Length: 117
Image (tube, rainbow, N blue to C red; front, side, top):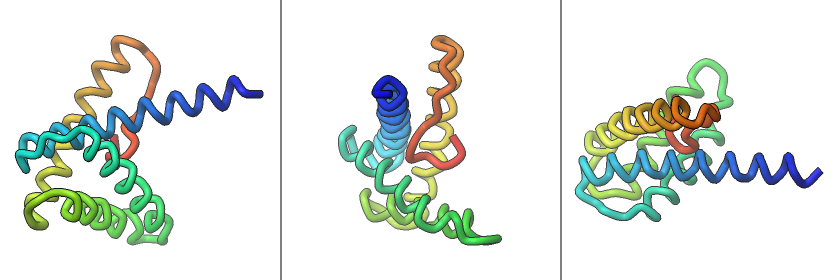
């Protein structure tokens, strides 16, 4: 019984680190902030925010995206435009990292904390 839990925990941690890395890249490029631990916490908070509101019928995904961008705005300098740009850059970075990691290791992970990746 502990083995599936350990596997799930490892998958969660790896996905969180990938999501954090994508946000780190976007923060470095867009907001000139160089802090990986801040990015990992932001990924976790963004994922929690997404999960809290995404269940709302019809408009949940749109509200969840606004909440996720709001978390980026709250955690990094700049306004809504900067946060939205960070979100786009993080999404692209996550897709690139996931493509390479999944192609090389063939493990099929995602990026926790980056919607759609």
